[in-house]
Image 1 (cartoon, rainbow over the protein chains, first blue to last red):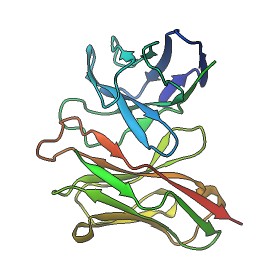
Image 2 (tube, chains in turn green, orange):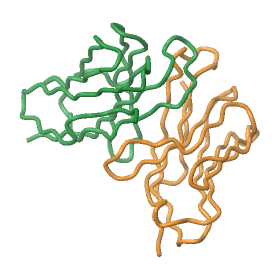
Image 3 (cartoon, each protein chain N blue to C red):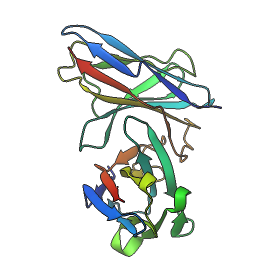
Length: 116
Length: 119
């Protein structure tokens, strides 16, 4: 079955350390997204990518970085510049990144990041 | 930017009774609207979507929502709650097709409503 795989499910970061969250999809979707979820705040967009080798900042991009070298992969790096990284991170994808994307987003099962 | 307001952060119902989760959106146009459900430590699953076709939208698991432009509302209902419905529900608006919106169809999420179902 097609879907989105996020790994690891749980991740711990030490102070001053960068960590990378993996997101892989086999849905052949063009557009991919990273969201951060904090209790009571809904989901906030970190970065998104409409097509390979292109990505855009969302609302809370500071302290994060991404790459989109392959269509199926969109890893997120949480850098040491992100002072409050403890959260639940969700990756999503949708078909059509070129201006006709009104289709629902499909979500992975998330990665929970905590600070040691 | 588009926005949605979920009017209740928590809703509790007894099993077998109706469910009503309220959502109001902010837009001068008729946006695309979605309801998603999230079970603990899981991703979001689409319940239903409204994209300017019929105003009463039927979704999965017996849920439905009615788009009311005059009230800028998109409330989610279910006639009879089941224990498995206990989860967090998100009302979501897309800016796709909105003048000044993105071509991507960015999603804007409400803060969520936690639904508890008592036996």
